[in-house]
Image 1 (cartoon, rainbow, N blue to C red):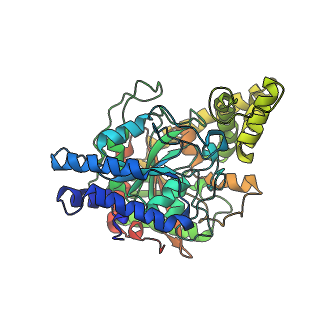
Image 2: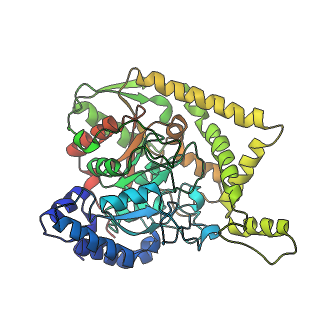
Image 3: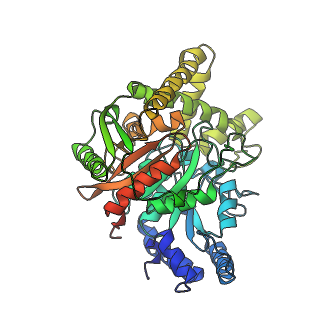
Length: 486
């Protein structure tokens, strides 16, 4: 083991370009690392050894011909809710346990075009519904920093794989914090782009107006490199934005002097661990030292309603999206019954896990006659208010700073019997999806040896500014360089 899986994209890129390392060697090293630590971490549902080595050989040919791109030859873990042609895509659900898609998601096509190497499909909460990766139908992923604790969710497998050095970067999806919260818990850098910035075509839907794909990486520079590769308009996704994306990796100047940054007081919620609040405030103080202007008295008063709004809108959309799993067209099918209706009922009863069923029922209730106006319509109105408050804040500030999570990673099993406490894990990240704006979580210290994340929230389509702030902080600190001893 050479530890090459712990390189940044930029470091690996330099070694590949100067022929000090081949993509085949780098990929073999990551695959060996997976074999070494997977019995403890359980980050992958599927490891694609054969495909990875084939792609690595193709990447080496591209590099030898001088046709390499920033991601050429770089091993990636893809969350298991993005369709991969010929490779099992399960959503960590029994419902799709044996589903092999006939096409690639747009982001997977873009990674392929960039020459990236897919080493496997990462574990997740079933259908992306969860904050701990304990809702996977197959197994729970462990946090590489403490194997008795969760890695966050729902992109916990991808975050853990990056933290443990099983790949160089990962792709996750974020519906209410599912990239940023695992990034915080695993001490990696995770970006949720502006809604519409990255195509959702081929992403198995949870809540279509909230879902967004983004990178999990070691630092902000790597985040920018991945975003440069996967962003852009896609005619297959009617919600993707035609707005041009600047070259993000060229925007990282390290200079944040004069930037106006606000700290919304509502995000330092009741019940937040004091050590987390202290670490985040210290990180904000570092940004002030770097020349940013900090306003500690910002207020976004509708934030307190975000949790309720999310748990009406997201389950409602899930109820509609998951209606397609009926045992007829694809996926798990229970057939030992006397009628079609019984077969459909048993398929859904046995194919879905407890959390997925809970959210389908919540959503079906909110959309039902007599409750639609009282719950769903009202939630959409409050969603508009939350979005307006962000718009007003961004008239004054270049970005907002908050904790990513109110706690450090909690113990496996600690919250499984208390859904409300589990949902509170995402209280700092949910409003960002509701508003559709971009946000990045970066490592900002440790409490009792467990990671703490700082969240940087940006204006719509202004990923450049939040990544510039993240990069400046990372140039001045070394939290993102710490590695778990696993």
